[in-house]
Length: 71
Image (tube, rainbow, N blue to C red; front, side, top):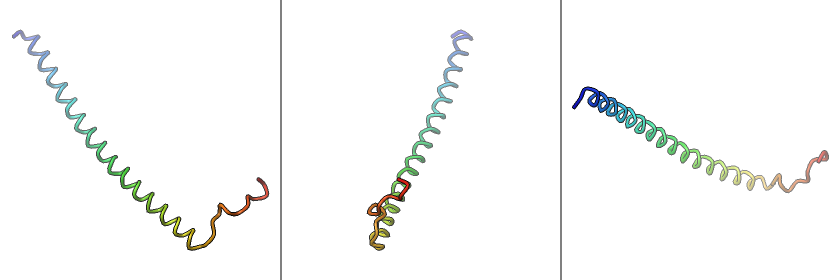
């Protein structure tokens, strides 16, 4: 092989290694974000249930109140 072809092949190998490293990093980031989204969904669901329970225990729903006079 000529020196130019060897050099081009080496450059391509370096680029592929860099792309592979970047892809692994992005994959780890997406996985971490997915875990966080799932955790936030569970927390949101828990808070919604807690809010519903609080409303029920108070026996009063703000949606049943008439709107304020400025409406």
